Image (tube, rainbow, N blue to C red; front, side):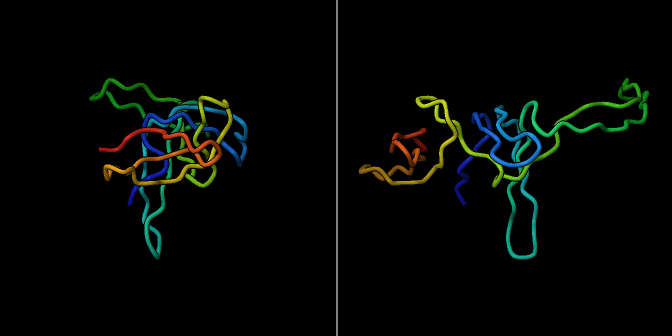
Length: 115
């Protein structure tokens, strides 16, 4: 399965408490559901939560309340188009030489070339 959003992509949140915010994808998290897989994303500065952490002297970690990013579902984000500076839907197409690429649906411009 080819993912429309990948690690390092610039995205914009289109639904939820952080609607309108932008960030970079740090991690992809695949979670199983009854009939397939679900894709969740950890994005810098998006969906911040407070986590209560126990002190761990072996890792030299102090305890307390730590703010960190939680995963957000991939259906709540869109890839950011750098040309228009707006969120844009992404599709796949195959080039003449057989390479599969992602492209922006509004402009038809290729996002990147997949080898």
